[in-house]
Structures are given as structure tokens and as C-alpha cells.
Length: 362
Image (cartoon, rainbow, N blue to C red; front, side, top):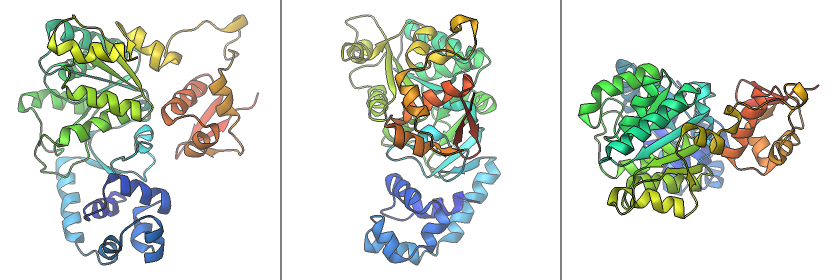
């Protein structure tokens, strides 16, 4: 199992998620890291004591016990080197080296929108979140949130009611549900989408883990919608992380003068896109999901945007890896992924295993 090496590496003091990403970029596989000579590990930026720990790693029994526990739970372990690891998440600064998944992550989940907000939401906020989630799910968009009380739960329920997919990112081990009252909701999410965690099995829900969890919520999504957030809300952390990752930040306007809407309204004043419907979200973050009439009655002949032309111009060989296209085009990751999906739906490019793309001719 490919995850075995990354669980072992991540258990070493001084090897965090950002370091694991550097090792993945330098070596390609976790196994290659363990086989790498000390001088190569040093060139990847590892300290001498960490290099010694990797070379002398002996705690494989602990790692295998973690794998056994995951198997007993029916959880899949998806490592950063695997093709079905969420592609958008791979390109954030500190992607989890391993994701624990109950349910399934699908290729279509690249078209995801996060909906987050207050735990003490008003009836208006809950209705807004549920309506937005339902509208997006009905269009085939995956809804991402954090399973918390309030807006998060409303978003998951809205997607489920529409028969769509939803992903809940946990701030605890995959064997636990927090809050406990959402146990039945968690089972529904796992059936219709996925429960996801980066934390070892048995990890309790500690406060410091939720801000870290929020970077995954943002990283899985093309945009983050904030519904009712106070000035101290963790949802604002998610919004900030989304901006840092090049994602869209959107917000539902709330009643003025209330503490629970002060943060979300301030986001709008600072430039977040104001949204009132699922159509508003699609227009901003997934415009290819909106029906557009073909030009001159000929499907697939629509004029390319400047960014789409730049991305098509980045092709040099028959099948290009997505990271090479991103580097050559100069576009940020989220924008490049949006355009690749748009081009694929328009029949301009074709996707191959391993997130490689080829340009269609004709």
C-alpha cells in the first residue's frame, strides 16, 4: 500500500505536511524517500537529525497497526502519490500526505464548492445554506463542508436532499464523529460522498485541529461560500486560506448590525463576491456549468478566453501532466483546473490516467 510509506514519514518529528510535499516533488514516491541517499535528502531541505530518523526508521509495526485499524473501519487510505488523490488539494502549500476516506472520492469532485459559516446560525442563514447547496448539487457540483452544527450541517443536508454529492472534512480521526449528534448525518454523507480526515485513527476533536482542517475544506474546492460568520468565526480562516490558495471567495449578505453576520458582510466589503443563489456561485466559480447558446449554431465553436488560449498554448507533447501545463501557462492552480474542465466539456482536450491531458485536433 502506497500510503504505508507516507504514514511512516509523517510520523517522524520534523516531517510535516509541507515537508512531505517537498519530498513528493523531489522523489515522486514515499518508497524512494526511504531509499534516497543522505545527500539527496539534504538537498530536499531535511535537517541531519531527520535524515538519520528516516535512515533508521524501525516503527513499521506501528504503521501496519494503523493500516489494520483503517481496514477494520472500512476506510480507504489515499496517499499524495496516487492518481485518485484530489488534484486541487495536491497543489496547496501543505497538502495532507495521506487522506483517510470513508465513502469515495470521485474524479467529478474536482468541481466542488465549500459552504461554511456560523454554528449559531439564524433560520435565514440555515435556509440560505441549504438552498445554495441543493442548487449546486442539482447541477452536479460537489458540496464540501465540515460537519459542524449550523451552516455546515445545513449545507450537507441541502446537497443530500437534492440527491447530490457532499464531502465532510473532519477535525478528528475518521473513526469519530464530532459533534456526536451528527452521527446519522455522517453516515448519510459517507453513503452519498465521503468523510475525509488527515488525522490518525483515534485522534480526538481538539480545538487546534479545526483551523488546520479548514485548509483542506478550501483546498478541495474551487470556491468558498461564507454564510453568516462573526468577526471571530473559523469560517474567516477558511476564506483567508482560500484566497492564499487562489480560490474564489464568495459570501451571502446578512442582516446588518448582528454579530453573527459582521464577518461575512465585511468579506463582501473587502471584495468577496456577493451571492444570493446557486446561479450566482456558478457564474463566479464554475461558469462552464451555466447553459450558453452556441455561436452560429455550431456547438464547440465558442470563442476561447485569453486564459484558455494560454493553457492550450502550453501543450508541447501528446499527453502533458497537469502540473507542467500549470507551470507553462503561468495560471494559478485553481484557474488552470477550471479551464481544463471547461475545455474537456467543450471537447477541446481529453484527460488520461494520472492527470495527463492531450489536446484534441480538429
